[in-house]
Amino acid sequence: MHNEAEAAAPLIRGIVAACASLPGYEIVAVDDGSTDGTAAALLALQAEAPALRVIRHATAGGQSAAVHSGVLAAEAAVVCTLDGDGQNPPEELPKLWGPLLADATGRIGLVAGQRVHRQDTLSKRLASRLANGLRAWLLKDGTRDTGCGLKGFRRDAFLAFPYFDHMHRYLPALARRDGWEIVLVDVAHRERTTGRSKYTNFQRALVGIADLAGVAWLIHRRKKARGQELSSPAKELPRA
Image (cartoon, rainbow, N blue to C red; front, side, top):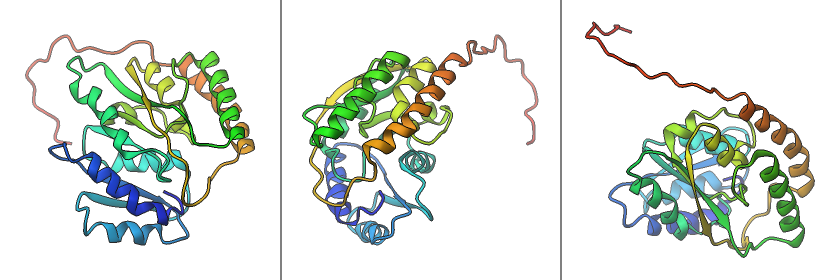
């Protein structure tokens, strides 16, 4: 969350309501160097939401940095993310953790939300459609909307991905690169009612070109073999 003080209360309360069916959960809110009252608003909500933890960046690092800090802080094996601006409805969260918790094969690494009926400006929708088309053609990641903040994944799978700024837009490609199965689910999208967008179409285009080339390189240079221990003789464990 970056300068989203007004969105804090409805967002956290919505997450609490969505998680009511879970036997246990935590909410990790990352304040990405906000200069308004976002951190104070989140801390005030801890009284009514004991599961809420607040992580703060001293300076703004961007969405991928915030997601990465949140996953590092998380203690559960399954992590679900959503944007802090209120445009990702919290009631869609069960669609993300459902397939992961029900997976008996252990092969599902990522559940990716795909927005339907997007509540964005026409220019943003057109720019996103163009970017997603180019990305899908080059990376073959199998999804039409990687920019959606609603995603669920295994924590260990995410932390094995190489970190880079804007990596949050390439999670399906990175998951496929590492051999994980992906589940795609349609999710709703809301119009922004507080704050303002942190990106412009021009900014997205500039970083997107370099990111696409970098991710394509990472896929091409992926590790192509995995070790499997054939025997485990009894031995004294190392002390450190």
